[in-house]
Length: 362
Image 1 (spheres, rainbow, N blue to C red):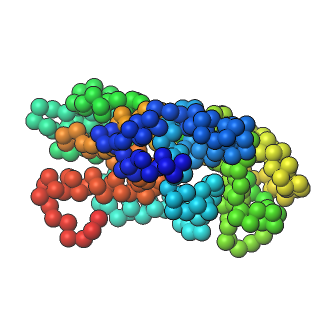
Image 2: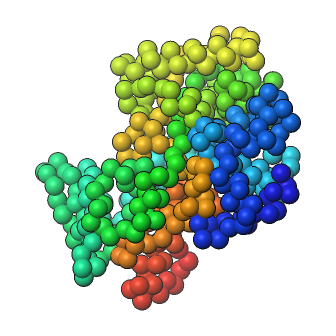
Image 3: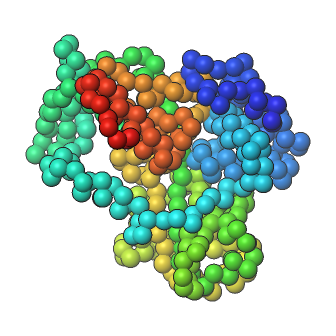
């Protein structure tokens, strides 16, 4: 593993990669486990790695590039070996009131008419003079907005449903938009009136081939009750069939289905934590972004062959049309931080075009 890791450039892109990176990119994560782990998926290590990377990237291992595993696991083995075989993440810090407060605060800082709600991007057209026309589907019908620059931050999984035939995108950009992989992660959250798992699992998280990943969402919070998150990806992540992408048992029309999902999870948890069901309050929430028409998935993931095909090209501008979002971030793909970094990068490109100096760091 480390030998392979040291033969790939961490900054691998579509136009800069080593022979080792090319070989790994054209191999699936599933096949890598079969080839390089003794006894492959028949071994505990092979099963664990398959579960970890299906969950982490949200795509079944036979679909995703082996570069995902070698880059991520190789880095951990080289610099943080104690966490190499764990999907445990630091959830010590949270935004009080939920992550939604962050975009709400950003929106509140903007001019009153800067954000137009209920405007779904339907088409993009680039004119000979490099002006851009954006066509939006609104409650009042289709509306055109003409602009000098357009910054597209919607995921490519959603951009595929926009008519960009007249946007002037080159062939590689069109390939990236049409083919970039997306995870199908889901979060099923169950509430309990006690936290018996803390006596068994000291780091408050664990993985198994059936459950994929479980962690406590209330670590460090006061009170006796707690919440467990069942985090799934790949086939299991998209196996839910809710009527809406974000649902809770507080909504009567969704309660029965959510409790059905919860019972399935509890049956599996009982083998690890007997008696846990006795503490279940019946309250459940499900986040199913694959069913969100504005996202169509959880976050980006390179499939077999995509790292050396267009990795790094996702964020390359097309004249006056720029791109940003986690799907454009090479190192922080899939994370809010990646989206923030790419937003700063795109903003700087526009400011430089306009010869505007930035006194404060963005």
